Length: 116
Picture (cartoon, rainbow, N blue to C red):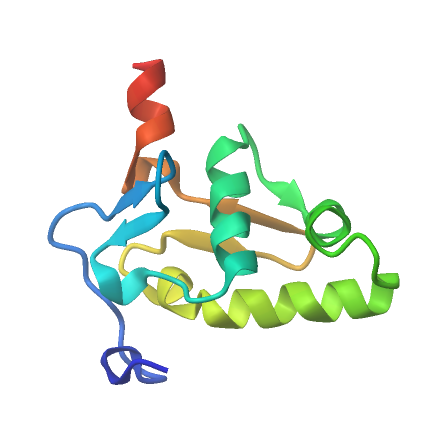
């Protein structure tokens, strides 16, 4: 884990983070960039959603061949990797008991720019 995101620290964004989905996946600042493919896929799916997505739906989408309990555990682990997103100030990712959502108004992504 990056030391800049210790347990009690929060990332304060001076400028909105940029999430690039077209071409190679990239996040600026790089400190927010997830390393796993599943975490990147989760962020991409959340950016494409118009509303919060159910955890059941996300775990079924990203971990199809796994049993439900294992898929849910994998989603939880993926969300642990995205802790810098939930601990940012303001939070960039909201992970509730039933749903997960990205704070689209708090970041810049290419998909939103195309719709503008």
